[in-house]
Image (tube, rainbow, N blue to C red; front, side, top):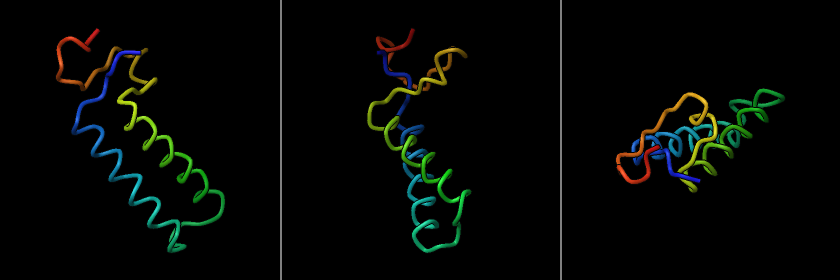
Length: 71
């Protein structure tokens, strides 16, 4: 599994996940929408930790600046 996420991409995903978690736990968003967004937040955190986004593969996207990890 080649890395396809750069530092900026990972940081943005982590910030979005933090905002969603904050809004969910303060009950600003709740119900089904809150749970769906919370699942997206967890996915964002996981993909940031492994530096790989499976949705980038079919489109040939890579935000990783390291040339040896690009396809």
